[in-house]
Image (cartoon, rainbow, N blue to C red):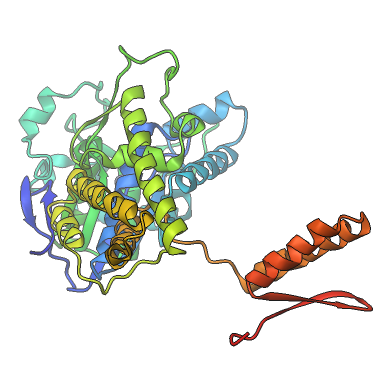
Length: 471
Ligand SMILES: [Zn+2]
């Protein structure tokens, strides 16, 4: 079986078909860097990190582009509140975002595109849309004319009439249709602005993603991701702008959207308080636990953020950690052994190929751990026949958990670090001798000797060398 994904544009599960059979180009809408990232958004980024890891595991060469929206109404407002300029504010919160992502084990994108570094490209795109009659200028603003783009509403599956009925915002008086959206906003007093053919101003939010995704990945890139709250209007508008501007289709081959997080505010216990940001969750729980929670439901489903859900995730993560520690203790360092056949791997891949069904994939690893714990007990009781099977299970465990972004793989100690540690032990031995603690000094020499490190006392002090393998 091959990978199948729920494509929001098709509104069904379809075979994943990138333009090139072994490469995937993906774009995910990044944060507006005006505050700490909400736990719901953090889950979206955790999920697209997982999707990227899984695609890589399945042999695709992935190029992952994400943007930072660093010019926006919310940024301008927050900069005033914090009494700094917009650039300082955006820098402050993009660093905070990166810290949170690191704690959650989310990898950095291959290309990070900041809106403010692509303004000339955006101005050129808006000019192109005006020239082709898809956009019009009014008082220094430029609006996209939704009625002139055939198929506006295709992605979200709504007609213009439906959307007009759902319109809550008071339309700008210069708009020809209430759903027309800003491509360019005329500068207001004291706001950051750039020069343009329509006077000083700044880009509307949607244009940045069309421009930057096409710039780095080209039209018809493979996967566009984001939270399901972005389908309308943001992604609908991205699609309209990109296809209108280039005259090509499709803008994107597959649209993937992650579900929202439901905050269990009514029942939220006192100890959890009112956690809303990823930072607050990370203050209470390890990044691995938050990751486990994020994977407990599949990406499209709505998950509940509650004290109990996080405690369940912590218990599940503990089972894995204990299994890994016991294996490492018994078997020495455990490494992934991808050559060994294992039905757990087959079941894991079948689950993940089914629109990234992580709840089943996690259950498969729990099954593996259950069998592994049984074999562990047998090996501990001296049944050496179970040793080989346990090694395979431990190796598969490392492999599959690392696809999910958990770092159980052994940390490699460099020769340099090992050397400094031995030097330090030699120093401790010297100290012991100076304090006439000869027993302790001798114990250090013996322990190092049992690890194959030979100590030689010379007139200029102690030296060490590795014993030759034959003794
Ligand atoms: Zn976007």
